[in-house]
Picture 1 (tube, rainbow, N blue to C red):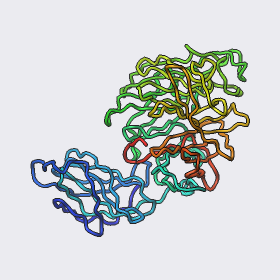
Picture 2 (picture 1 turned 45 degrees about the vertical axis):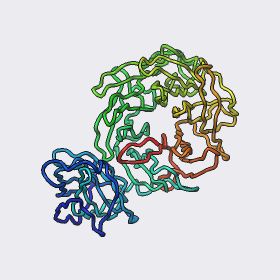
Picture 3 (picture 1 turned 60 degrees about the horizontal axis):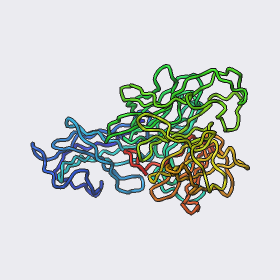
Picture 4 (picture 1 turned 90 degrees about the vertical axis):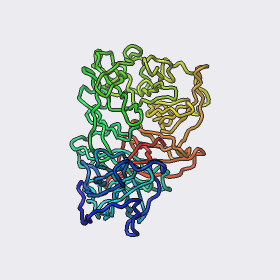
Length: 492
């Protein structure tokens, strides 16, 4: 999306620049006030230019020349008149490049670039810019709230509009769309998340977990630039349920995802044939260069007899992993929908440490008023070692979906029910769904097939609720993920 630049004033930098009343004053810096100015004179910032992103918006990419600076940011006034600043970014070769995401569509802004070195700073003159309108097929996409305001700054999810265009989208706490990235000719929703380096990753492909079709994860920045592609190694297919990156500072050290291959298995008990081509999954660790390590292969541990989820006609896989996470001890936690199980694996070797739920459970559950989970998605390890998941509720009577939390005692092989949220008016999402614990102790729940997103307090009181809609009609989503920033990663 391009920006209309209505005015760029001739630029002159001044030391310790104080922005005029027509622009703004924003406090805070990334560098220590005790740092000296580098050799070569005063800090300077000039020659500001502004453009849009690559199939992304509403945002501005601000570039400007700097001297004697080690970091830079953009300053602007938002559509409400509030003074804003981006995070600081490092500068290179005398040039600064700063992305300003989350701007309002079809709105004018005054934007400045600021260069800084320790306590010394300088700002460009303002560039007056006007953002483009949203694409036509996003102008009627929103989270229509019925209760309260969401605690998270942003909610990240996906929508498909126009028949075959996939969009990654973010909404603010009131449900208004504030950012998108377009993926044309990709009409299937799948994993979308913000990775620890601040980038986003999205699955692009036709697989729902078993089809012998190509697929990949694109890692991309907030301005839409694709920086890396992640796939399972040949001859395996890439599963679209979860990609997790391990990052040291901003350097990606490894990626973890599911692959799968097909085996002729007896699936007559699950709507298939006696030698039905059936997918079985693996856990892979990938290096950024593409080297792959097979950590775990489900064919070594389970058979179709371990399927406990309700049978589906022409079932495509025996296991169906749908989430992968890292526990605080560095080991891996995986949700397997068809097995009705959560497993923990050694983070280095992939060895199976324990199974919670399913036919081969090592863990004894107590205290759950609904007797356990079924068809579950998005199991996440909490900092205290508890497991929080979206219980789709395929085994409940009546069927109902909920968020559920369990404490795992690995020494005694027990799980204790800790908390759940059972909605007074039952919702049932047979597939997909998400839960996420927020920093304030609330939980964000995505009832995917219904389009409903609910934030609840630990007491069970509803803080906010809304429905993802396209042209006023509820629409499904894979997950609804809270994030606290578009231009950088901060774990909520």
